[in-house]
Length: 303
Ligand code: GLN
Image 1 (cartoon, rainbow, N blue to C red):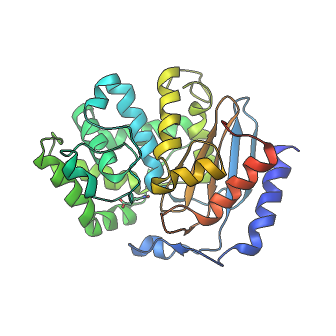
Image 2 (cartoon, rainbow, N blue to C red; image 1 turned 90 degrees about the vertical axis):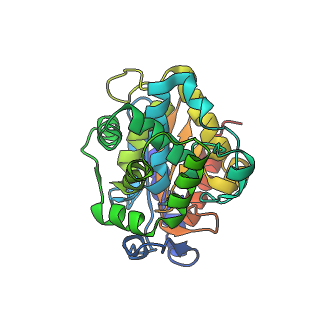
């Protein structure tokens, strides 16, 4: 079945479920206001074919999906040295958990939990104007200007007590070089980037084509680095639900509490789903179902 018909069919199949279960993230007003009854899907193949359905053009807060692109910049800038600062093991704990940091001497388990992304932000702050670089990377990858939602960024900063704690705790172990406020400013702004499904499917395109830019063909990451990002997405990209994602979907994924999930089918395509109501781990409830239907109907899986 052509991808366009498949996405139309998946959105139509799940539409009756919209708004029935799950909770929209409510820790800040700008996210709590987002209507739960939304569902969008988009994909882009390595050959440049695109398909999209439902609310695929509606911008949403990408939240932790930004951790993927922060990591990309840090890997590109630092190579292997990055791994002196950040681990590569799934945490099995909530994305904003503090518990493992003490016994692991302030070394975050992986770059996709909050502690890890804050440590990545610290590396970026040491290298360049990190906020500008993240926006420049995303804009280049999706071919359209991408920006921060200022209201979300401000709310993240005024309510992000746990992230402040994580950053200070890591700093106390000597794991953060820069001023905590500067590092968190980057982290909170990255959480507050607004994009839609189609833009994210394009932006993740380099991950399904051995690190090559979806439009220019330049290496965004080396082939080996891109493979490693996919490995981290599979094992750590969906918080403590990574096992369930591997079991049900079988694709590298990265989610955010805005309800977006990016998934990669290596050598074939990148896709993005968005639906704001979340399951308890913080992943989009209908997003998971949409990806499961996609993987089942196409037979696409890395396994
Ligand atoms: N802004 C959220 C936080 O820092 C992002 C978390 C997420 O999407 N998992 O807690």
